[in-house]
Image (tube, rainbow, N blue to C red; front, side, top):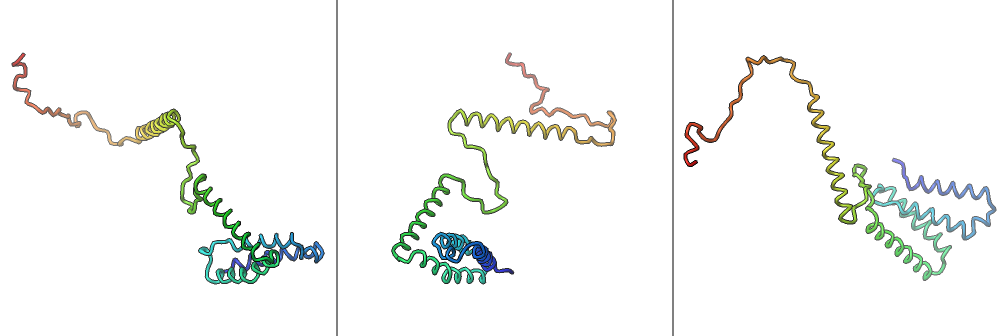
Length: 183
């Protein structure tokens, strides 16, 4: 299996080499380029460790310790500034996660989950309208199933009227006794 972290890191290095060919070496040492490289590394390191195999996890740790930390220290030499930067990133990501959990639908992890895109009714009249529409939908489905059953082919064997059994009516009382005594 291909190590995805190494593959992505090679893509970052190729990206860096393209800029080396286009711009002078002073550009590669500039703060702007270092920030762009740091963002690429953050994206690469943000891949969830649960989805990685052991080799990829090791590559991710090494990349974090060697490249990311070194680049971060060169951009932000003051440890207090780095602390506030990392605390701010944590706070922003926590707020975004909370907002998405409360306001938006949770992200779908499985591909077999259904998505309900219909708006939820807010007041009584909308609920009534929704119920009427759903009853109409249920009735049309029932009518379709009745039509489908009616169109089913009948038995090919014909039955004559002499062979048809006559159905008797089952009565819960004996009709021989008179019912009109009290009248």
